[in-house]
Length: 180
Image (cartoon, rainbow, N blue to C red; front, side):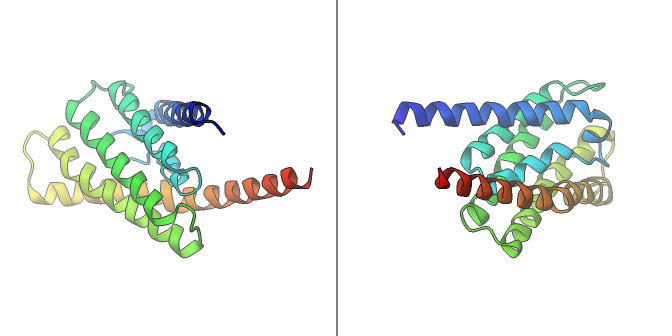
């Protein structure tokens, strides 16, 4: 594959992941925002384990877009920057831990690492955006306890089976292509 064609493919993959992330977040806006959230679009973070770095950049860009246009809430610069950086770091961690080396244990570690990164970053600033006066207890209960369960649902409970299924489909397609 030529260098310009490979570059075009990466740009297209980034755009697809950004669009999917944005669409899922906005479509499921009632559960995608606020302290007790299940951002289902974070399933796509796990795609970095099989697709690679283009999924990482796509999730980052999609998060920027979703946080720029939250449904029913004004955009918050802290969330735009903080949430997007959290997704970039989390997705990159999944890429580094599991890309090209998938196994159930490695994928589980990647999902838990990713969920923890997002929880620590987003959970640390979210109470400050929502509450007028914030205490350490608010950060723990509203921030961490509000974000972590949703991330576990998105990435570990929903994301792992999805990634496993997609991986099997891709492997089957490679076998079919090689047979022709």
